[in-house]
Image (cartoon, rainbow, N blue to C red; front, side, top):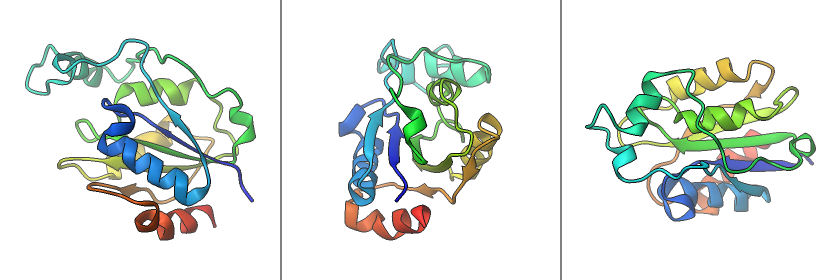
Length: 162
């Protein structure tokens, strides 16, 4: 059986919608859970989408932006499948997710994207991940809004691991 990791970023950590979805996936998959934590936490002002000077707006406008992460997965080589999740900001992942991806080798790994969003679909996020990790194999991602449980995500998780 493939060893599986669920890596996620959420401004609100494990209590946010994305964090709860990640926990549900990890439970359904029997996977390890890893929170992508920025070295400098995002404040409410940092994620003010209406302020073009906010940190999230500035990072989004610069595709090469790579905010520093606080820690890395100790043994990424030990995982075969990695679910990567985040809220969608302006149609794609926050740049902190790219920082996480750049810090690890995803060659010969399966990546399964998942996301939460108030209005965007998951397609642009999936395509962007494929550009960031061209050596990985990708499985169909899923948008997971609302309350997710291990039971509600189990069919998708099992098909992703098959």
